[in-house]
Length: 326
Image 1 (cartoon, one colour):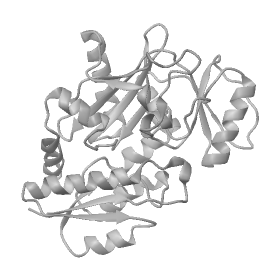
Image 2 (cartoon, one colour; image 1 turned 180 degrees about the horizontal axis):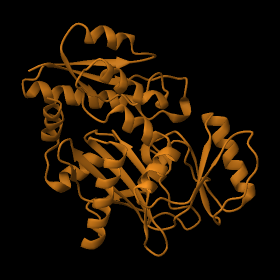
Image 3 (cartoon, helix red, strand yellow; image 1 turned 90 degrees about the vertical axis):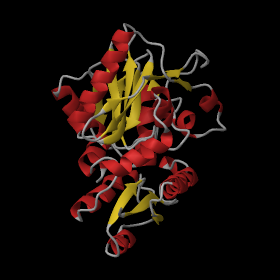
Image 4 (tube, one colour; image 1 turned 90 degrees about the horizontal axis):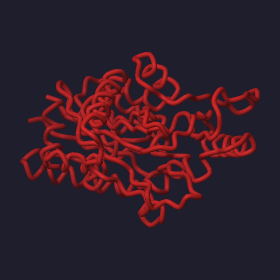
């Protein structure tokens, strides 16, 4: 069998507002290496920093399968897709999603246009640019404000849900200042939040539905999954937003969520593993709020939890990813 090169993004201080815990990603890379070696698969680790030159040198030395854990270059998550594109250009087999899916999913406007064209429901939204003309929303408050081209809940905090134009302006300025990005403003859906992970390359399997439990969130705080709630394990919001998998939903809703997740992934060209996030409105109508190719596959992450709920061993999944590249 070919040797496996496990790549991941090393920490940078250039974009401090959008970094997840890179030490955890390095731990994940070592974990995967140990799993592969346990099964007699030769593996090596490579942390990428500012550019792809070092990766270019490595791929010339051996015929690799690349296990792609790289979520950014030099701390810039908007360059994530460039790693996959580089591997595609050099005909290197790799795990995870292709560059088109990574780039398209990161642009929330583009992905919503494609999803809507495929008759998949997305919330009403508007795009705001720094220095652009003031405009009225075509939908009523409350609304939620996010960076247009970030993921991992970057830029989402307790003030992200806005209830009037003054609050909207303040949160838009926060996005413009900290992310140098346009902002997307969506209709806030004050219902339940679900996600469905999907695995597979030739044949996709939707894993059990997961739900974020907001029952312990105080009424004065919006029921949303903020950046802190998602990543900072010592933050109180992390403790108050526990995922439930499998979620307590009817069979009809479960099937609907899974079918929508499978269709959304097909529309965006996803493969191997991805996650689709949903919110419902006060009437129970479901909307897709995000498609996430290459979500976290750490041993304690949501995808691993969904694998366990399906009865799929974590190590077996890691080995499947390698097998799917062959």
